Length: 127
Image (tube, rainbow, N blue to C red; front, side, top):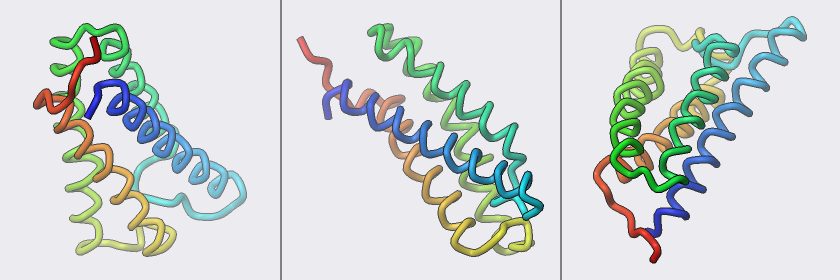
């Protein structure tokens, strides 16, 4: 996959994560339950920071980009994937619905796959 396409997919992942947290924040402000176990403000800020991790990729600073993707793998792998799977078996009431849980897990699995591809260098640079 071309690096540019990978980066755009990663931006899409960040936007989906931010959007999920915006909807969750709206739910809370409307008197409802947040969508997931993640605090919406914290989740949104994490996704914003992740978006900043992509800048070295766009600037073709590929060693730094790959290092930052390793950090993202650890954070998203635990906080965004493992944590949601554990919560499914321990306390699904942390989510507003099973669908909200599935979206949280699905968005983060999508990002995790992209980050593994980036960290492993599974992309082509255009010349």
